[in-house]
Amino acid sequence: MDRAKHNQSPQGGTARILVEFLEVAITSIVFLKGVYPSGAFERRRYMNLVVHGARHPQLRDYIHTAVRGLLPFIEKGLVERVAVIFFNTDNNPVERFMFKLMVNQSYGSKVEEADLEFSLKSFLIKLSVSEPLTKVHSCDCRWEITAYFRSLPEASTCKDAELWIPIDTKQWEQPPLITPIKSMSSEPVCVQLYLEHPSPIEPKPCQ
Image (cartoon, rainbow, N blue to C red; front, side, top):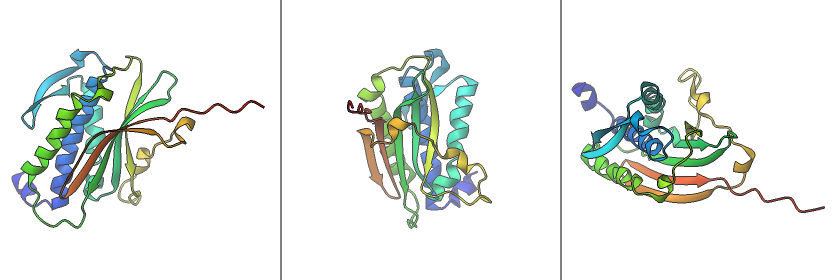
């Protein structure tokens, strides 16, 4: 395990840290939105912070599998954004928490993991006090994790990549309303977190 870490490329080390961070951050968002009873989560430590991890096996496995499956694509710089999307009872998306990722593919130096983790730590601190996240959703809403690719991998590389292409409803055809939450830039990675709401659909003029 240590040897594998030692032999990792800068992009591989960065991707691994990003995936670990995304798993914790996405779990925190779901916890803060109040979709599940508090008993579905448990307090854990990550980057010397107290965070909430999923205790329920299905919830934990969904987040873990979805995010860990993106590891090779983040490493190759193929993933542009990872979203946590909340839907209302009519199955229309009403909120999208977007993590925008940029991994420098030409960066050749050894990744200073402590520096990168310190930068990402500020996101987790910001999440707990962010106003958009303090507005709790109803317990009957639905949510999912979606990834947006810059370009699709070849079919021989990943047969499941097409599953990550989202299909939006009509109200998202217009540019969304964006609320910035947090951003950081630290070689070899840049991360932005922002909230998207659909633009209101303007009523058609009377004939």
